[in-house]
Length: 380
Image (cartoon, rainbow, N blue to C red; front, top):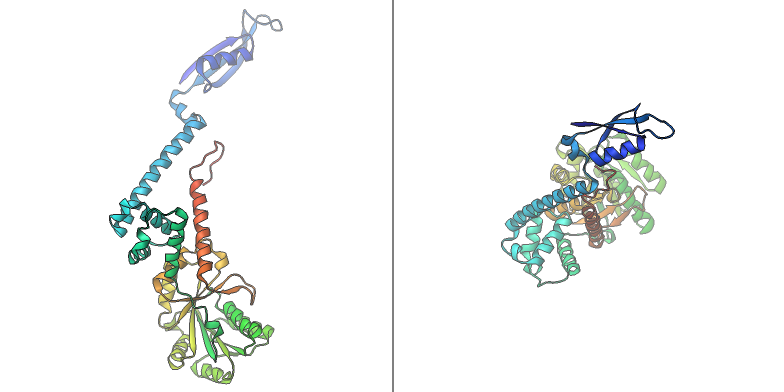
C-alpha cells in the first residue's frame, strides 16, 4: 500500500493533487488543518493536509465496468465454444458424419433440441426419413416447419372417440392429484349438456372420502345419476343399473393397482367388456421420468389413451412430448383450467405445435439476453 500526504491552501486543491499523483482509485484516509505559508486570504497561514492511500494489489477489484463486461464476453464465448463442442460430439454420435458437413442437418438438429426433444427421439426422427436430414440449403423458416412436422408425425391423437355411437364406458386411471375427478366431471357434463347424451357416473375411489363427495357434488349440480362402488360386485351392479345410458364415467383411486381392490376390479372390467376405454390421466407439469414411473405403476390396467391435465400450468411441454412419442399411445384430451365443463379440449397436433413454437421463441429470447451486464445489478 502506498500512503502519501498532500498540503494545499484548501481541500479542493488538495484533492486535485491526490488525483493527479495517485489516480482516481486513491482513498482519502484523513484531512486536517495545518500551518501553511501559502494560505488563502480567508485563512492566512493555514492550509489543508490530506492523507491518501492506494492499494496496488486491490486495483483489479475496482476495474472499470467496461473491463468487467469484456471479461464476461470472453467467458460467455468460452462457454459457447464448450457447448458447441459437446453438441457436435453428441449429435455426431447420433447422426454420423453427415452432421459435420451438412448445414441443414445441423439446423434441424438444433431446432429439435430447442424444442426439448431428447437425443434418442431426434436420432429416430432424422434417420427414418433422410429427406429431413438433407434438404439442399432451404431457408430457416422451412427447416423449422419441416422439423416440427416430423415431431408431429410421431404423435398420435384420438380425436373421434367423443362422437362414437352406442354405449361407452370410460375409466379414469392415474396418480392422486392429477385431476381425474374434475376431468371426469368435465367430460360427463359435455356429454349430457352439449351432446344430449344420457350420462352417469360411478366412483371406486372410496379411499378418499373427499373424492366421492366431490363427484357427488358435481352429479347434483349437473343433474346426473351417480353410484359409489366398493367392490367388483357393486361395480357390475351399478353398470347394469345404467345399461340404457350412452356414457358411463368411472372414477378410480390413485394408488398402485396391485394394492387397491378397486383397481383390480377395473382390470376385471376391462377384460370382460369391450365397451370400456381406459384413460391414463397425467399432469402436463410432471417431469418426464415421473410420467414414465406413473405409466409403469398403472401398466397392469389396459388403458388405451392419455389425458394430460393442467396444460395451462406448465411452461415447458417437452417432457410431455417426449413421453407421448416414446410410449406411442394416442392422446385424447387436454385440460386447461378448473372450470367445469369449459376447461377441456380435444387433443390436437396443431395445439402442440403452437406450444412448441412458443417454447422455442422463449428460449431464444432467454439465450439472447444471456451474459448481459449493466454495471449496477446482476440477476441470478
